[in-house]
Length: 299
Image (cartoon, rainbow, N blue to C red; front, top):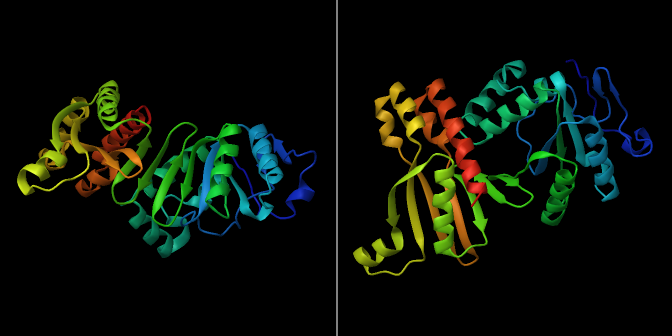
């Protein structure tokens, strides 16, 4: 589906009755988007979300404007041109594009780029909004959720934070997914185990770091439990490609306490398995990551 786009300009003038000027056969996003030749390297300090329906794009833009978000802070990527803008492989933007994408494949950004490209390919819309501060970031996320946006995410310099309606978890380039929960430590551990089991993971090992530090060093430490989680079906499939993958198993899940409460963290298997340099193994890792994400959100 061919969907041409243009930079946001004169936004208020191009909205009539808070309705985005969009034709529907084919969908024609002619109000918001980056310059056609601009390469989408990384959406620094932006809140992003996927909108499936055209009328919801109009709804969220109107709500953002009413909330005082300036039109130049809002961008919508659409259709094939949006795909080309993101340029998942980097090939359409020369050596620099390929260089940027090569390094992003080693981080959490890779899975987001792929997700956004797939959504654009299905004819959906990628909304990008630049907040001026943390308070506005939360307000923008709430507005996107109210408009039915999927996978609302904030991209900072060193962290990728998915902002859910009821759950929040952060994804870092170095480790994985974390979520702060409003549960006492012991209850969080039990609920984490139950959530993992519901997604097909068994807990093979438990390491109580607080007890170990006390035993070995006679030093006090906060509650900190490492769970070794494994989904037998995925493990069997992955080991069929490379027997040495046992070095990267099982997937670690950590429950710990800090000064603000209880945190649950799961490893990012996509990053962990990237060292195998095998496309089939990465596909398995992506499926495992999706299940771990669901388990984390259900704690």
